[in-house]
Length: 221
Ligand SMILES: CC(C)(COP(=O)(O)OP(=O)(O)OC[C@H]1O[C@@H](n2cnc3c(N)ncnc32)[C@H](O)[C@@H]1OP(=O)(O)O)[C@@H](O)C(=O)NCCC(=O)NCCS
Image (cartoon, rainbow, N blue to C red; front, side, top):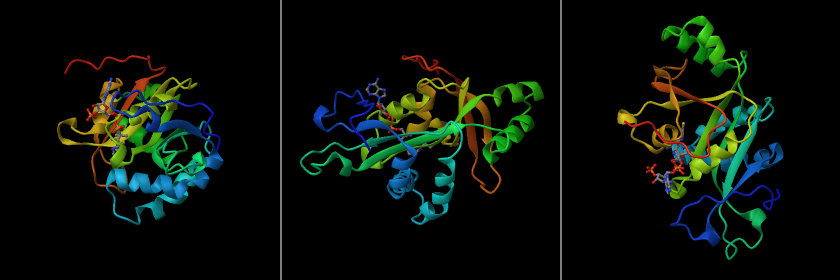
């Protein structure tokens, strides 16, 4: 992987600039090589039981070949510990792809929207041209420094789709980092309290139009 390419450094005054994680777009080959590392960030960030990564690995690997797939990772920069930047540890990962009617998530969201009262035409319109943000995870030790926002902005940059959709677990008072991030970036409700087949937890489906302006003012609460 060429870490010199396409770098973004999160703008956070509290970071030591020399050691601020570097955000780079990952190729399919990069993610395949780093898949176990990326999955361990996912398990740690979501606080899932160890072993969850084994179920998810084939799914993440299959997603890589979907049309419009894009992945962005953040790597720790620590030249003293890792003199060769190719050894830098991954601390955050996000990816997604272009949504399509044959995909399971698309079909679930379609049913959820219809059950929630969305008219057929508006449902079709909303699901006709979108980027699905499939995963976004920052290792707990690296959270709270806008890495999530930097990765999300990078994923959304110059996308050909008209909108971006995602699902996130419902949380009381929308009081966690994921919710704050999505609201801050102007994501709005598509479906609330939705249960995907095979998962009893309630989820929200959120979305916003693309492109994302460089500055987004969250709606007053
Ligand atoms: C959700 C997640 C990806 C967000 O990433 P993050 O890097 O921690 O969060 P952000 O990029 O939003 O940055 C958050 C902090 O940056 C700070 N920040 C926001 N805007 C800022 C600004 N303009 N200047 C300086 N700091 C700012 C805020 O203090 C914010 O902290 P808060 O969330 O406690 O309010 C990450 O917390 C995570 O992986 N969580 C667990 C897994 C998860 O829920 N994933 C999403 C599943 S759908």
